[in-house]
Amino acid sequence: MPNQVVHFEIVGTSPERLREYYGELFGWTFEIGDTVSAAVSEPGAYGFVEASVAGLNGGVGGGATLQAKVLFYVGVDDVGVALEQAEALGGRRVFGPDGVPGKLVVGQFTDPEGNVIGLAGPA
Image 1 (spheres, rainbow, N blue to C red):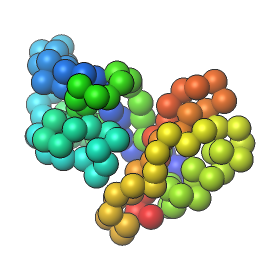
Image 2: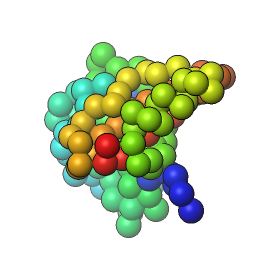
Image 3: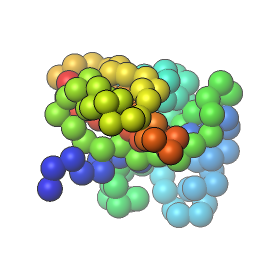
Image 4: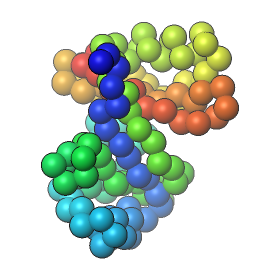
């Protein structure tokens, strides 16, 4: 199946509190690290949860300057091209492409109803 959901995120202004909450609620454990974009989470405030624990790779992060949201990322071959297509279809680019080409590049857009969707890929 092309373009599968590959990652989820839960972002808020108090990422430590959110990790404690979801850890207690679902038994998730987190590896604290950095994302590829400051638009996703403040440095050192992102907790990765493995697919073997949550059923899908994901993370809980954020920081005082970031708006609370829950979103998923769809895997694509080229984030820039996918963002352009999303805009051409009536969406709006939030940010991206951002990251390390060849390793991980991310971006986000809103659909015509304003829902934020993430994109992730090697380019």
